[in-house]
Image (cartoon, rainbow, N blue to C red; front, side, top):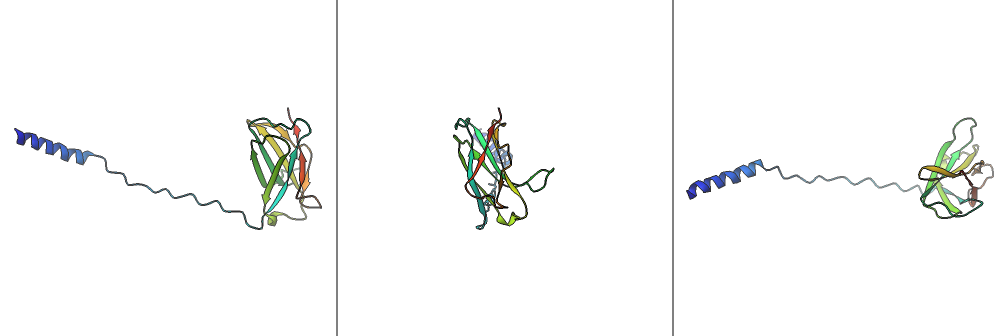
Amino acid sequence: MSIRYAAIAAALIVCAAACAPPTPTPTLIPAAPPTPAPPANWAALTGEITFVGDPAIPAGAIVEAQLRDVSLQDVASVLIASQTIERPERFPVPFAIRYDPAEIDERRVYGMQVSITVGGELVYVNDTAFDVLTGGYPSRDVAVEVVKIR
């Protein structure tokens, strides 16, 4: 009987080996390509976002500061560059929007657009045009005033 049990055990071992799923081969996931660094000749539009009133900004706020080509009237402005600032705490909020100077045409008009949202709801916005970069307008120490929406 022990030969019989040995034969059964051997058959079970062979069956288990044949029925076992193949050992998976590790799959190599390629690394994401590195984010290219901005060209060394990029410039920055710098300044502060200001508000007349309580300097505290609601928790969870997100600031979107945009540099736009506003040359054409009655059409949407063209986004040149932007900066997102998460969770600012107080006004003034400093910004530095990096842009490629090769995209700037001295004959065109550029402006700043600022919006501040909390939970996806607009809370502050600049409600007046604010020209920058060309036509003698500043590119540094810009102060963009926002107003409260609600």
